[in-house]
Amino acid sequence: MLCKEKHFPVVLVAPSGAGKTTLCKHLLMKTPKIKPSVSVTTRKPRPNEVHGKDYYFISKDTFQEWIEAGKFCEWAEVYDNLYGTPKEKLTGYLNQGSHVLLDLDYQGAKALKREYPNTVSIFILPPSMDELTKRLVKRDKLSTETKKRLNSAKKELAKVKEFDYAIINDDIDKTVEKINAIIIAEECKVGGL
Amino acid sequence: MLCKEKHFPVVLVAPSGAGKTTLCKHLLMKTPKIKPSVSVTTRKPRPNEVHGKDYYFISKDTFQEWIEAGKFCEWAEVYDNLYGTPKEKLTGYLNQGSHVLLDLDYQGAKALKREYPNTVSIFILPPSMDELTKRLVKRDKLSTETKKRLNSAKKELAKVKEFDYAIINDDIDKTVEKINAIIIAEECKVGGL
Picture 1 (cartoon, chains in turn green, cyan):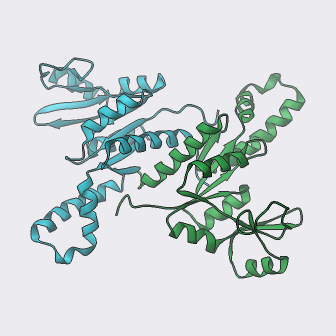
Picture 2 (picture 1 turned 90 degrees about the vertical axis):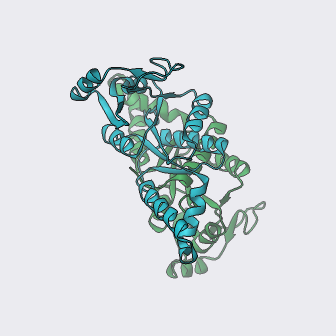
Picture 3 (picture 1 turned 180 degrees about the vertical axis):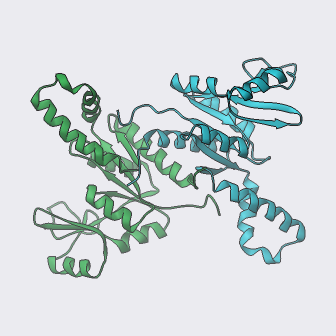
C-alpha cells in the first residue's frame, strides 16, 4: 500500500560532451526495470535504423495531426525535422510496471514534467564542467576566452538547479550506479518530515 | 561546486518489531561514510557499555545545564532517564565529511529536522505492516481484534507520510541497500524542475 511499486519517467538532460548517449545504453543494459522511450520523428530513417526500435518514422502531416490531437507530451523541431514523445506509449510502459528513460533537451524535460509531475529529472554534467565551475569563484585572473566559457557554463548551471538531481559523469559505471540509486530512492519516497 | 560533497543527518524511526537495531548495526558495518551519533544519557551504564562509544554518561544536573544552554538538538525523558543528541558532536561529524546515523523516535526526528533541515528521514516498517495496510481496504469482514490492530497501524501510517522515505524491512540486506541508495540520491539532489 504505502511503499507500493511506483513507476515514473526518468529524464536525462545534458550539454554536449557529457556522454549521454553512451550512458543511456549502459543504463538500459544494466537495469531491466527501466525501458527506453521510443520517439516519433518525421526525419528519414538511416540505413541501420529500425522503425519501432530507434524511432517511429511518420510523415509531417501525421505528426501535425498528432500535435493537434494532443498525442505528444513533448515535441520539438530540430533542423526542419520534428521529434516527439507520444503519451500513449509512455503511459503504456508505466502501467505495465516499468520506469521509462527519456533522453531530452531542457525544454523537452520541462514539458514532460508538466504532463507527468512525478518525472524524475537528472542533469548530466561533463567532467570539464566541474573544473569550470570551480574556477567561477576565482575568475578575476582568467583570460577572456576562459571567461566566455565560464559564462556559458554559468548559464548551463542556472538550468541545472531546476532539476531534481545532477551528476558529473566522470566515470560511466559510477554514473549508472548513481542513477540506479536515484531510482531506488524515488521508489521509497513518501513525503517530507 | 554543484555536486560537491554534502553531508547530512540520516534519521531512522520505526515502530517496535521493525528490526531497527540490527538494521543500524548492518548499515554502519557496510557503509564507512556514515557514522553513528552517540547519545548522551543520565541512565547508569550497563556492565558492557563504554562511555563515548555506546553513550556519554552524564549526571542529571549536567544534563539539565546542557538543556538550558541549548546544547541538544533533541532530547527526551524515557522511564525517568534523560536521553539527548548533542549538537556539537553531530556538527563535528558533518564538518569532518561524514553522514551521521541517528536512531530516534518520531518526536526526536521532528526536533532534529527543525534543527538540521537537511536531515534525511526514513521510516522503517515491519513486514507485518504491509500486510496490515493491505487489509485496510477490505476491513468490513475483519474481527474486532484485527480492526484494533488496523487502527493502530493506520495511526502509524499517518506519521509515515511526514517522512522523506519509507522502507518495509522484509529483507535486511535489501533494506541496507535501499538506505545506501537514498544516501547516494540525496548527495546528487539539486532542486526540482
